[in-house]
Image 1 (cartoon, protein in one colour):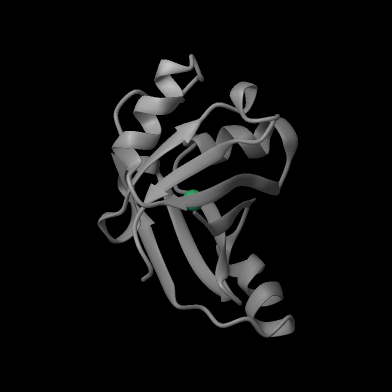
Image 2 (cartoon, rainbow, N blue to C red):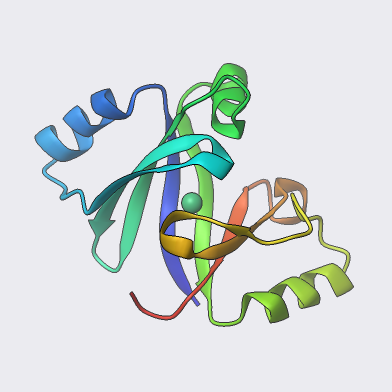
Length: 133
Ligand code: CO
């Protein structure tokens, strides 16, 4: 298992990039829109992991609701697992609370599920399937 990325909810992707890319000096490897999640995101590699900056593209996006409630900030922690179905089955069998029962398909076709903070020590946890990119 690896730390795939840290998701940070921001009001403005362009503004956040002025800090993370232009001031801090991180590289941006991808900027893309994920219509199913109603977000636009930028991926910024940091060592073996990445920071994912998330901007809502709609008022009813989970990221918009998060920002309305708590302001900008750390939104989720994403772990990469080799076998998502097995991980989900194990969690479900143990009664863990998942945000949705069916895995979604995100950026670059990666399959993922979100585990509710209630089951993960107060952290929204994203499990994403994959080996090394
Ligand atoms: Co993510």
